[in-house]
Image 1 (cartoon, rainbow, N blue to C red):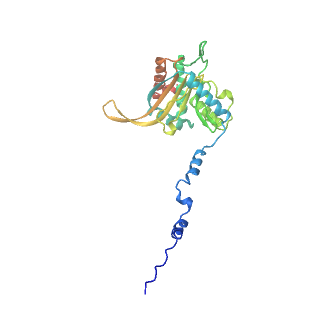
Image 2: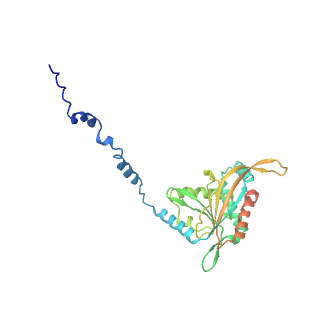
Image 3: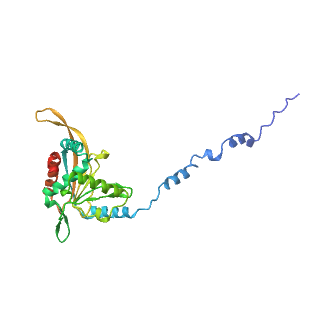
Length: 269
């Protein structure tokens, strides 16, 4: 007898049907998920309408950098004496005075000693302020504003502390009158409480000067007897309008401020 013929092979499509059904078309294409990821990334921004105050701040900053010839000068100030004087004053007076309050008073005293720096530029004439008014930067939900302490040179430390507390509080509540944050002789921008050691501030026109105050940090210095000591040090950078103050006048203002802060008894006089 002849052997039986072999069983016929299954058709080709039957052999490949199972693997084809096991893998879905979406899973087999690694690029199929990319379009949605890419489109989400392109639409990840959020539009927040700008407030009127933000528009004004942006306009003034642009005008300041475009129109005012900024020059900069940095001075290092030893803070040990001022820190001790503040602690003693708060304990004896029962008034809570901040370092920034003392710096505002020192700036007013510096302008009193260097009156030629208490001016601003106009094309027709260099105009001198009749009073010494010191503005300070205050952060609000709507943006940065600069309330002004009027007649700061004539105010006591306690009066300046009361004024800054009141102005900063009403600034955060958007309750300042326009005349309370306009004008001023110069500004103080203090980021020391945020551990910023040194920075440069933009002039607030028509003012011709702004002091950028950094944090107080310990620094090793060589003492008079050759022994290394630790001193508390603060960096302050003056931005000034070069049309009003040349380098010599700016240096005079900086060193005057330095001397007042390092000898705080002069501030209280």
